[in-house]
Length: 267
Image 1: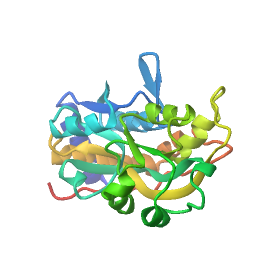
Image 2 (image 1 turned 120 degrees about the vertical axis):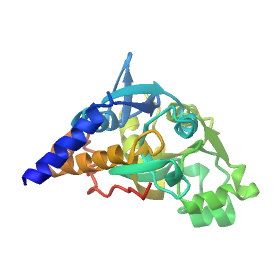
Image 3 (image 1 turned 135 degrees about the vertical axis):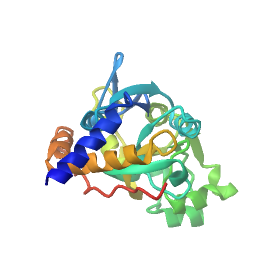
Image 4 (image 1 turned 180 degrees about the vertical axis):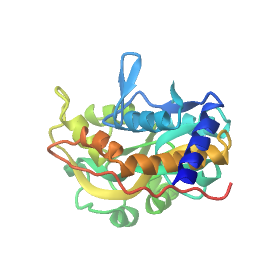
C-alpha cells in the first residue's frame, strides 16, 4: 500500500513540476456538453475535464475553435485536448483516448415528410433521399456513412457545417431538412424556449460509439498520459464523475457514464 501511495505522489509531482496547463479546443455551444456563458464555459464535458485536470494538478485554458480547425491545431501542437472524440485508426496517430465520457448516439433528426420511407443508412445508400442533411465538418459518424459520403451521387444531399450552432440554425430556419445530431443534445435544444422545433423528430439511429477526451500524444509525455488515465479511473471509482453526470439528466432522456476503457497505445 505504501509503495502504491508513493507512486501516486510521484506521478502528481511530475505533472505539477511542469506547471501544467491543458489547452482545450472548444466550440461556442454544444449543450449540454459545452455551454458558453459570457466569457466563461460550463457544461458536462467542461465539468468532467475540469475535475480531471484538478486531480492531476493542472489548469485548463479554453481556446475557441470550430471542430475541423481544432483537429488541425492538435496536429500542429497548439492544443492539448478535445472532448467528444470517437476512436478511429487515423486519430490514434495524434490522440490518446481517456474515458470514455459518453456513449454517443447519433440520430438523423428532422422533418419526417422530407425523408419518406427512410429508416436506416442502408436504404439511404441504395435509394438516396430527397431531403438535405447537415452534418458537422470533420466529425466521424462511422464507416457506413463514410461510404455514402464517398459516393458522389449521395454526397450532394449533405451539407458540411463548421459548428454545431450553425448546423442547428439551418434546420430550425428551414434551410435543410435534417441534421445528424447527438440524441442528448437534441433533447436539450428541443426544450429551449422559443425554438421552432414543432415537426422535428429523431427519425432513426445513424451511429453510436463511445466518445473520449482526446489528449495530444505529441504535446504530453507518456507519463502524463498514463497519469490522466489512472486519475479518470480513480474519479470513476469514487463516484465523483457519476455525480457530475447526474446533474445533466433530463426527464425526456436518461444517460449514464460508461465504465473506464482508456486507450493508451505504445507511444
